[in-house]
Image (cartoon, rainbow, N blue to C red; front, side, top):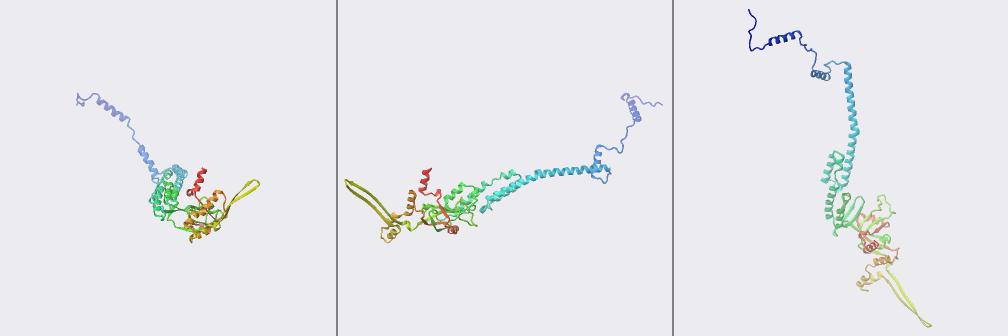
Length: 387
């Protein structure tokens, strides 16, 4: 029998021999098999994770355990040091600076939004804005003075319109200086236009509640006797005054904007006894002819007024002659630099009612001054001539 396969013209030549050679090589040199305990890289990673995550199920050598515990402790210490350094060197100082900036800004807010504006909606909005600020720069950029000035001007404008007396005056009460100033409403409006919230927050306007107080003072205390009826004067207290409930302030008046309603001198200043004499001599040869012209006047101003009242004199003529006699006398004394320095004056002064006791108790220590803003004509003339 013939075992050879029939020759196929389409079967490639030598293919059978090549396959037999391959089978023989595989038989002589078999391919090594993978060990069961050999792990791929992925399996190795899973194995290590299993050691860390499940140490109880995987046995680890004592040295390996100690090494890993040391690494963990060292890492923990380093993290603690880094976090502590960041907190104490960077975070905590920044927070302290931010807290200080917020406190300062809140103090400014409460200083400007005080009194009647404490519950202003803008005050609450600004306070919330300050509290929500994240950095010191954000806090410093919050503008308080501008909205506070606007709010105070709006509030005071309404307050001035409400708190006026029948003479269109209002009274400014300064809380930080403990003084009252009576002024015309136009002057009060001028104060609003010229100042910001730092000043306006310390003022409140009230309706003038005034009292006329009589004071008996010396010429020195009475503005050198040159104040006139209608003069606006400020009242100061000299350094001899001490009171535990009163703080001496030499830079601002104790009472400002007081009106002089009347002035009286002592009656002795109305007594007049004067004589004017003019003489000359004519010589003719051995003859001498002396001539003397003497004029005298003796009167009492108060007696003249009394006489005019009972129709002894023409009342209108007498009043015309004696009008402002006391002021004229003081003014002439000023011009000739010679006067009665011992003269005393009885003045009736309009002052706020809450200052009446102060004026009465310190009558011997008060000094009336004439502010240049309310200066009489003669003072304006003298100042203008000097400058």
